[in-house]
Image 1 (cartoon, helix red, strand yellow):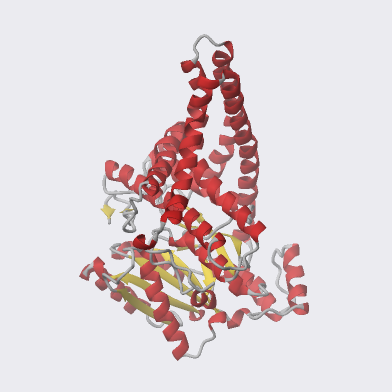
Image 2 (cartoon, one colour):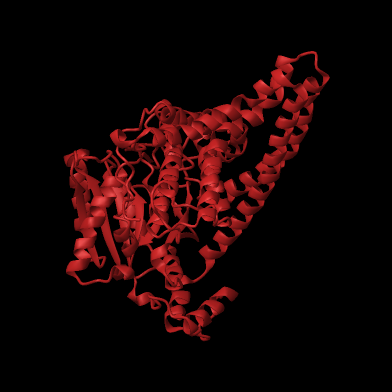
Length: 538
């Protein structure tokens, strides 16, 4: 399949519009089901509520276990000497004179590479591209990201730095980018600053168009230098993304083992801790919850999708005509573009190494609260992919295996419906039958049963708190010890943040899809830095 772009608004026919309505329709139906069933039959309503809660409870146990396993694996990856592992992989032999920890899978990987060479078996042949997308971020924000790349334990002469910036950002961002490029000259294999023009027809204002324009400029450079795109891995980074020092080594290691790297996306773990000590309590809860879920997904690769910072081979990007320029969720949508481009032969490989990102932090408390909702509203717009998958998968000629397509579509739809309805159902559904039938014994005993199950489920919060404290960076000197206590008691806000932010944002996006009120631009989350003297830079 070569026509991979989302149809323009004027080209979305009746069938496509029905598909767009589907996630919201299911979410609203499920949301009102306890109320409707309470009028029909109170026993059925009670069984529905208890059944939904028990299913969610069982799943949450698995999620907690996976999160702890993911954290353990990430901790191991951070401790390994990836420079030596990468060197041995390239030489295809173990250097016994170097005394380091080598996991059992490292020996197996070397033997496998000896027996079955891959298109890029030698790490020295790989070129990594760090593509930073920016709109109007300050020099200080971008400098921190650039410094994190320079601190990588990886040969910088095998890295191409691309800063993709927006013409609409104005003269200030252009000056900042050019200053960074000048300061970086000679430190990398090559540096590029690519300005994305304003008002390109049929493009949404946002990151997708920006990095696509930069990707095409990069393609032109590689062709001029006669560099095979299969040797090039492109990692997209937001302005606040700080790769771990081993990130490029881990990525290169995994890439060398891929028999067909064009069919693979590579997903590191987004960890929202850059400014976690400075963010307000509700944002800290949401940020840690997002980190928690990203750890879970590393152990559930069948559910893993491109998200935030991710990597693909340059050849893959050329084959998919880069990223979509018509959606504000170009990261997750890129999974589906690649999936259909290769007739379903596409997987996402987890990289158990973090890319550190910012929790939401604005100039004022109220602006921070608003910015958090806007960020989640953008993420939940991924529900729009349901219509895209249905249209491309079932009404456009393709060779995608139907069973695999149906399973992936079901997971996509279920995830967005759960995103919307799970918090209100878990918090309030047990009380609805008693409000409708106050004289019913079943209706009145239901809240007691629900509360007991919820009490047991709260044990799972301990896993979340454990990961919170284990992933915290060192406390800045500007904060006193009581800040640690605030990090603990903040978890009483979790029901509120789940309902007000996650659920409401999901319903907001799905409701807009129902009425065809499309998101017209990518809402950039403000980036703020707090200095040791508590001054803010934005």
